[in-house]
Length: 119
Length: 107
Image (cartoon, each protein chain N blue to C red):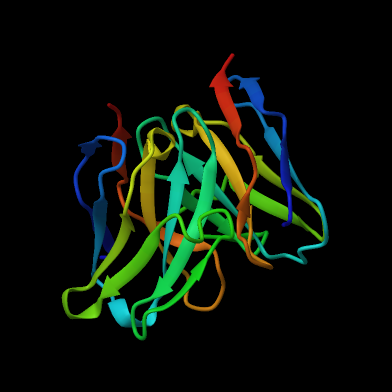
């Protein structure tokens, strides 16, 4: 059974750094892209970027390029999303999702990680 | 960027109703379109990919159609479990973009 299990909720202050994780199981982690999707409170879905864990090839949405870093550690089947300096506007739920092998829809999703940034 | 526009943004319906949601792309995306269902407090779930292909395990009352710039998601007979928000997503070009969502609520 394909599963993506994300790390737990975080409460941070503006300016702090953060790295959240997404662990894949039930499939060959290195052969499927993993994407990250943001959902701000009460809002829709926004694609942030995607990584191929096999070689760490990473693509970013222009809206998020330079704002976050996506990485992966294939030895432990885990993808990451990190911020070096959080802002209040980063408050959102962040989902990881597995991209289909041949096209770019997302066939399995993690449960989401709520990130709250508040002073 | 390709803009995805869903209509309506909210839809009130009753159990047993036939429901149709429309998604329009700002330029042609062929059939590179997916539909997702999201319930409150839960992650989105894939329903349909490549415009009309039902994901394994998704009830057959869901169907998708369209190509180019206009697409529809239809629920043939709405069930209690179907009250949720639905999103379309294009994946013909980067950045991947989602529609704004359609909230299907109980009438």
